[in-house]
Amino acid sequence: MFLIQTILSTLSLVSLAFGRPTLEQRDLVCNGRAELCDRSYGNVTFLTSHDSFAYSTNPLELARTQSLDLTAQMNLGVRALQAQSHMKDGVLHFCHTSCLLFDGGSVLSYLQTVKRFMDSHPNDVFTFIFTNPERLSPKNIWDPVFQQSGLASMAYVPPRRPLKASEWPTLRQLIQTGKRLVVFMDYGTNTADVSYILPEFDHIWEPPFSSTDPSFPCRVDRMNGPLSSQDHMFMINHNLNARVFPSLRARSPLPAPTAAPGWFDDLASAIHNAGGMINSGIQQAGSMIQSGASSVGGAIHSAISSAINQGQDAANSVLVPDYLSTPTTNSMRSILADSNGCAPFSGGNATNFVMLDFVEVGEGMRAVDRLNGFL
Ligand SMILES: *[C@@H]1O[C@H](CO)[C@@H](O)[C@H](O)[C@H]1NC(C)=O
Ligand SMILES: *[C@@H]1O[C@H](CO)[C@@H](O)[C@H](O)[C@H]1NC(C)=O
Image (cartoon, rainbow, N blue to C red; front, side):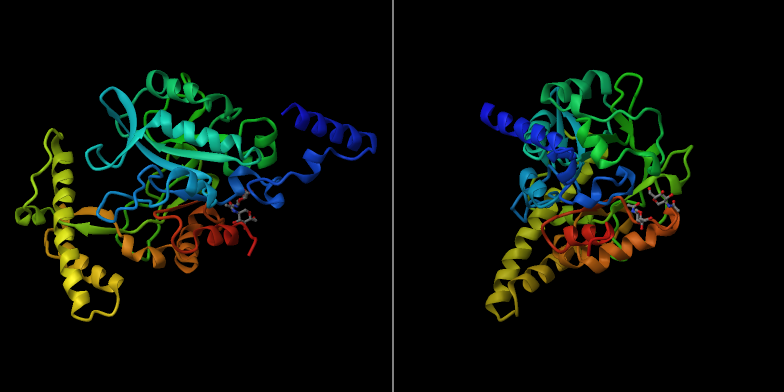
């Protein structure tokens, strides 16, 4: 460590002696691209992982949204992380809809993983887009875990709020001031108490989420004033969902989970039961394969589709990530079409956040490079 510091400081002395910018300034590469260093944060597109904590390699884990773990997602190029929080037994967790459906562990351990990754990637800017449906206190609940993880001091605090998309510092400025984490939260922020947890919709607008339409029709769904949509950044919720119906419940041999309040109960048991249906769907797929179906994927796809399509009540439908459509959803064509479809609301600018399920499937990173003007 000491040796490296000595070499580095000798190098910068040498470059000063020759009247050149220091190595660091001259050769800075920001988020993997030198060209991004002098671009405003608000003019950059980031690969974004939807419910980044909800990873599992088990396809029967219906509420999963990712198959790669957090570090592997970031190794792939994800620099914006979306996650949904819930309180579980007095500890802040990331869970998908309910901790009964998918418990991604404590927020503290998640933040510690990101901190380790950020420490080993000192020239990269990261973004959190956290949802706080229970409106847990920034001061009493969120700030302590940010402090404990060591990330609070790396979080950017804008000089005033809201900042227009064009008013954000450059990536170079964020990196060189050591404030290279930008934290947004949908609900329950209080910047008087915790200045670095920024109200998402004052700065970013979103089209509707949980789309079941593969054409991802765009409109401004969630946004707060006073800035116009053109002066906001925006995020495409580019994850496709399949409907699973509560009416499947009656057919299921599995017991419903207990101790979940209200509609969580319905949702949890529906998905739980859908798991049973899909289980039998996969057995069915097994016999279809034996009887000569052309591909394992196709057989499982049609078996699951038939399991999922047996319900009728669309109004009460339950949505799960449509894993089997991911190669199409995460294609360059589909991502660019979604960004372009939203561009009229942003003065023609590209999306800032391309939020995907199963980030390793398809062409997410290439599409982000294209939107940043590199391909
Ligand atoms: C597009 O983004 C750039 C950079 O943030 C900004 O200067 C410009 O105003 C935006 N264009 C429109 C029409 O909003
Ligand atoms: C950044 O600015 C360029 C040039 O105005 C624009 O084409 C691009 O869409 C902008 N990207 C974002 C994410 O605002």
